[in-house]
Amino acid sequence: MKNYYKYLNVKPSAGSQEIRAAFRKLSLQWHPDRHKKEMRKAAHQKFVVIMEAYEILGNPGRRQEYHQYVKNYLNKKRQASLKKGEARKEKTFQNKMDAWRKKAEHHAKSFSRQSYDHFAPKVNSIINMIGQGVFRMLDSLSGVDIYNRILDGCLEDIKSNPRDVDAYYGLGFLCSEKQQYREAARFYKKALSLAPYDADIYYNLGVIRKKLKEYNKAEKCFRKYISLKPHEAEVYYQLGALKNEQGEEKEVSACVNQLKKMHRKDLVSRLFSGVN
Image 1 (cartoon, rainbow, N blue to C red):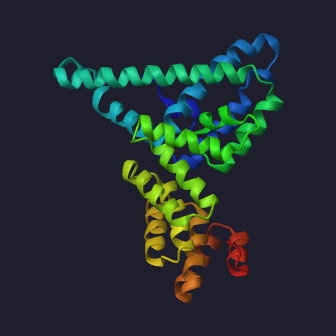
Image 2: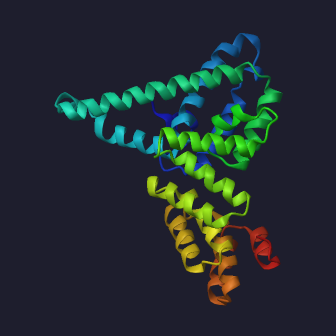
Image 3: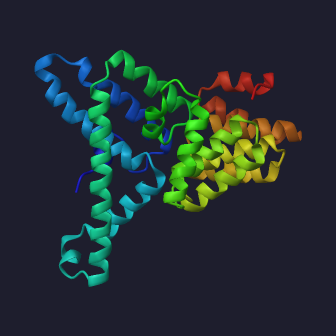
């Protein structure tokens, strides 16, 4: 069984942002166009496995299925005594893995034909913009309204798979960009119901709750994020800004102290300048 975390040089506990950052770094590093002719075949093979790893780990729903598979079906002694129903589940997941692998190979082949100068801006701009569903969005960059193309892609994905976390995450992002915050919250909540341990969704939902002035709900989201990823400075900035709006000076001071411990004086300054 392939260790996709090893392919991206991240730990199994890595959050979505860390996985996206690793994918961006490695896909740019191993794009065949960056290598000499005699090394391009090896670079392409590396490029393919990076795409394959992100195809699974970059999608919270698929990542959960992968974890479940590793947990339940990779013990060889257990495999020897698998019940018929369990064996069927294993076969179903293996079929999914094969489909995801073929999709990744298709994307890798397509992107390998592009020059590095053409490929790099796409990866950077799109991962910065939304982070998930990267392959669907790369395919959609053809000079048309990207928001409408992403929207159509998300709706199409949900129609074919109502449990597609990426699609609900994408809809939440689109609604937030259009300042349709209640709709954004609804889609992020749906994404959380399918991926309840994805810290980044809690963070995004917290930001939306804050914009809606639903302070208690926003705080719960930020606290949950901290419980999952306690060393991310940005969330302490958001929590501090939330408490500042509520006039809770003691809580603001606690967030400021935490930011100072993290050596993030830039976020402390930003907090008191009132920038969101």
